[in-house]
Image 1 (cartoon, rainbow, N blue to C red):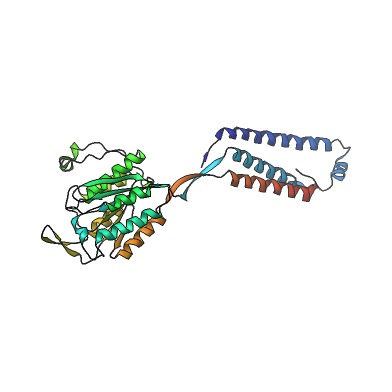
Image 2: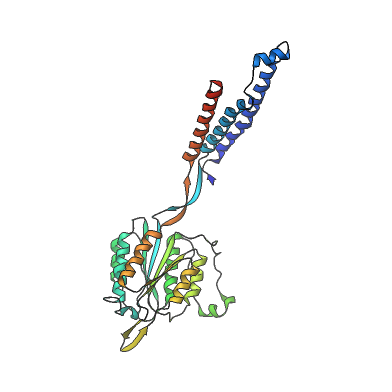
Length: 340
């Protein structure tokens, strides 16, 4: 809970003043009563007093006044609310294994078709980027809400050699950093991976459970066969508060593809993809058919638009103040035929 106008709370100093005035008025009333000639006359004049009920309307009125002053400070609460804002990086594997035909017409075309449908469903407040990776990774389209540019970038994707999942994640993280200003360039060096003492300093990790308003959707069908290790980059993503949703594409038994005259069997490494998603608090999906792949994207489009935000709750506090004011007036009229 925070306040937009906290200086208005200075008005709370009126509450103890009003309490003091109320006490003085009660004592003054008692002094007037004692002017009668005898105690019996006092009791006769006063009759059976209202007792403790006398103070209830005043107490309720003070509670209402306190709530009114708190409402003037414009309180706001931090909560998780539906939001259609953020950045989504579609990191798509374009290695040669994506030409396998266990998804028709092949894995790559099925993935591109589902990606187009996903982009078309996004509201204008969502920024989408396209990253392609094989033995290297490139940002084909930086984050944008221009659907025509995104669809054109997806259509240009073509297969290459090798599968470097880690580099695809690095390119995605750097695209997010450039867009949000959180994070920065990731310097890759095999010497640093072998000798951690030579590693460049990393930014302070975000507290666990806090995330950037940006995610990575990593779509791949094969085993990683290039440096760096995907799990190492997943840790960097977790430290930056970026969730990675992994999508394993292809059939369980795999498929044989021919690349430059060589027959190669592609096998889906589900364990690595599950580890990546678990480390970053994302979700792993297995898309064995084109229908499964479309459903994955539909699920992402409805579940990945939540963020922590502040909502002003002045109206609710004002409603509480009105309730106690009406309650004070009701009891005062009921017992004393007057307003407090």
